[in-house]
Amino acid sequence: MKHKINELEDIAAQVRRDIVRMVHACQSGHPGGSLGCADFMTALYFEIMNHSTDFKMDGKGEDLFFLSNGHISPVFYSVLARSGYFEVSELATFRKLNSRLQGHPTTHEGLPGIRIASGSLGQGLSVAIGAAQAKKLNRDHSTVFVLLGDGELQEGQNWEAIMYAPHNKVDNLIASVDYNGQQIDGPTEKVLSLENLQAKFEAFGWHVINSDGNDMDAIVKALHHAKSLTGKGKPILNLMSTQMGYGVDFMMGSHKWHGVAPNDEQLTAALNQLSSTHKDY
Image (cartoon, rainbow, N blue to C red; front, side, top):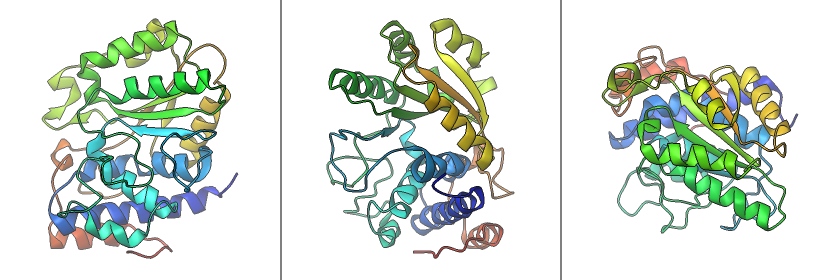
């Protein structure tokens, strides 16, 4: 391992501190899903992926990551900065005028680590499949990762992509679903039930693994396992159970923190729950 589990947990705690501070500072953004995915994103960038901070858009010879549910940009920006793509101090510009750190990731500002604009939900899986097929054509044996929200699986384009990938044996692709059961208007079960996602993906021809996305040891093991399954004829789905707002007790498990910024008192309470040996920006 590149890092011990407790070291990864410490990084994830700092990522969560970054998230609540960023969203609080501009009083805008999406803390709930960002906090829930902090362990996954930390594991991915600090342990699992073969990637370079000498950023090149084509990503030749390295693993790629695409964020489909682009509204959880705070966790993405924090992990990119903390892993060395740009200065951590730039996190203070989140959602400000002329910042490279827009509410949804964009490419025209040239922010290192960002390969697609994301925020229009339902599109990331299609992009990731295209990138994975390009790697196969280029005889590049790297892996493509993509993160999807569970709510965005209500978008029809996903199901075309889910059907396409197994048919074309896109087996250098690992998709993860942030399966927290919450979306902007309430529980997914009430808005539009997803039913049995594992059975659905398996019926389409995917290899499905289940993981606990808020247990660092479990998610690291799951992602290593997922990577060991590449090259075997099927795309891989990491069906990842998380809690929205994980790490901050008053945010956990509620759709109400999907897109609400904490006030001053709530920020202090959140930071008091998130200790880390790293430094704030």
